[in-house]
Length: 283
Length: 172
Image (cartoon, rainbow over all chains, first blue to last red; front, side):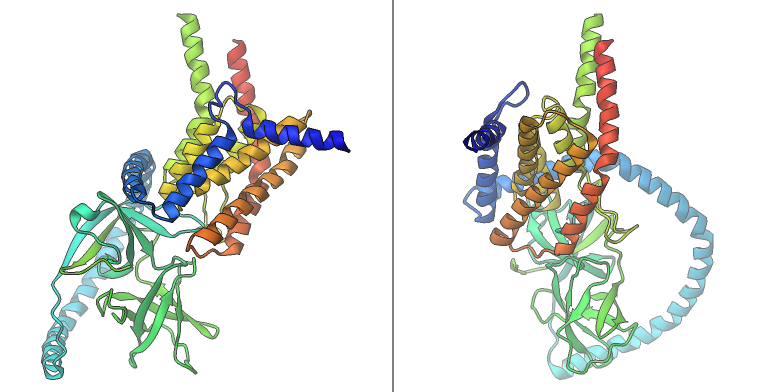
């Protein structure tokens, strides 16, 4: 009995402390080092944030370089596919353009009407909006975090909490800012919560990421009957996002409602970061 | 000249698994195939670390395992050191199994790999749940661990083949 316990202890000790030809450090030392890194990062010990930012910027750039051959292959194959459908798309777009031209006049009229109504309500909030285009450096999926890395950081005026758009559609918000890069938390991430409004009755809800491609609508009014294909916009209730940014279309799911996002979070290559001047860092 | 050439080839062949480990950590090539099959995701890094630590720890050093973990944390946005601790736990189990086992076969490796995954995920979860604000879907972690375990024999055969090829190169 005693001998088997001794063997066990020896095996454990050997596994933790043994060093060999390429084992310059013992596992115990590396465990301790990892724990120090972990707690420094978790408790944001002074200096660790700067160190993390420097490491992030370096690793993101190398990672982008390392992935470029695969991106090139992906782009070539998707480019070929697109070319095949371009003719069909062209004729369809021509028809759509005609329709849009007629709608354009209608929109112009509505804009004038909207302005005059806002003046009447005296709630015309002037916002100095500014967009910067950012390239997606990394979009590595993980079971824990749905996020992307973009090549704009504090040098370009990016702050935590800024909304990120694909074209004019909301895809997420900035959650980490380095000097040359930032991390965008996508709408479908578990930690994402965005106040939204939808439908002709301007129903208020919270868009909650659930890890899948279709985030859920939560905190809906009582006895809410879920309807499909209603346009979802940001409500701006949180004071972080500007109101009226298009998000997606509602989809009924049993007693709940999900949102089919306008922009596929897995197909992003360039995004817009909406910089509202005089905005403070919000997170 | 011939010796230098042979040495160079041997270094390149020996660095294969290490290169793969670093490349998988740093590149955005992910092993989450939710586009094809919603629950399919697995962790090749853990398989690489476990196999090579068990079979030939001179191929992948613990320092490299630690560094690959740190890089993986940066790329995936997890708290720094979390993946490193998880990977080092796998290394520790592999080292322990190596110390107490004489004969290795696919089935012993596969069975003990289950212990390594279990310990690694438990460590990961304890640190994640107690010290970070991340929300976790337990089913995703379970599926990830399950498929990692399921695919182990496939990589075991592949790495065995690679190991034998390295041996032949050395004998030449």
